[in-house]
Structure formats: C-alpha cells, structure tokens
Image (cartoon, rainbow, N blue to C red; front, side, top):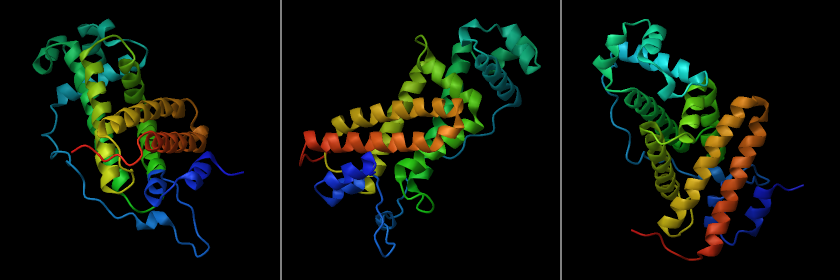
Length: 252
C-alpha cells in the first residue's frame, strides 16, 4: 500500500511541489531526485564559538539541570541545594548569575544554540539519508538521546509558567522556523507562498517535532514510525499551503 507521502506526491501538480514534499521516489535506473539537491552554503551562519565557560558556572548549570530533570521546577530550587549538588560554596552562585531565572534562561539559550547549529548542518548535508525531513528529525532524535535531561527540562519549561527560560525557548522555535524557511527555499524545496503563512505552518511543524523528540525518549523503538510521522505532516502542510495559496510569490 502506498504511503500518505507517496499519494500526496502523485497528486502534486508540478515538480516544485514534489521537491517540497521531501519524498524521493526512485526510478528504474536507480536515479534518485534527492541527488539533484545541491549543497547549500549556510544562511546566517552561527557566530564563532564563545570563550570557554568558567568552570564554576558550568558546574552550577550542570547541577541545576540534574535537579530540574528530577521533576523540580527552577523556582523550587534553593541556592544551598544547588551549590551542594555542584560541590561549591553557595556564595559562588552570584559570581556567575544574578538569579535562578537567569541560570534557567542560559540553559535554554545553550539548548537553542545546539539545535540551530545541528539542524542547519543536517539540512545542508547531502550524503546519507536523501529525505531532508528525516535527516533533520533523525539528528534531533540523536541529540535528544545524548542530552536527555536537557531536552526534558526544555520541554517542561516550554509548557510551564511564564519565565525567562520559556521566552528563550519561544525565540528558539521562531529562529528554527525561520532557518527552515530560508534554507528550504534556498534549496528549492518549498514552493512559492506568502512568508507569513509559511512561518505559521513551519511553526506548527516545529512544535510537533519537539513533541516527537519527547516521544522518542519514551520509546526509541518508535524511531522509524516517528520519522515517517514527521515527514507525512510536513508533506500535508506543504501541499495544503500550496492548495490554499496557489501561485502566490514570497514576500520580500
């Protein structure tokens, strides 16, 4: 039985939309349309790495992450508890942070930087998995497995009460959405359409992929099914957007 992605691919009216669906049907001679996608220079490449973080600051951030991953909200932490977990004097905290909220925001900023750098690299890579969607989401699953505590804390922070950390994550999702829009368009993987509409659609997709990362942490055996779900959702969003806004050109 044909997959949803394959069915949408067949129904797509032109090659531009087919490329946007990220499907990669193979032909009898083994030619794969994914091989036509050129390597892409990074858009708005991340700045050079910052200076190494002070040891005490790193210890405090790692200790906070361990405590918060044990179902403790950042506002429930005490400085003494945090310092004890980090193996430091509690007065050390104020050498590096003005408040626990600032520490949480820096953790989420670090999380955001990792995601932007990693997804850009995965999107630009041309070897291996031909599906751009599966390549990027697959990298996110690997990142989540290697940084389980950080991902779970970020998920709880995003869905928790208002905080500096939550604002940082919302900015991260907006940045990831814009990265995807600009880079997919540069690779000719998105059909024309109003930028404001694409941003809304890709924003929905990004939030769903974040949820898929958490589901992957719950059960890694679902990996292929979750990758297929991400690819299918993107195909439906792209086809639906193009159907609603046929022939519309992007805003400058």
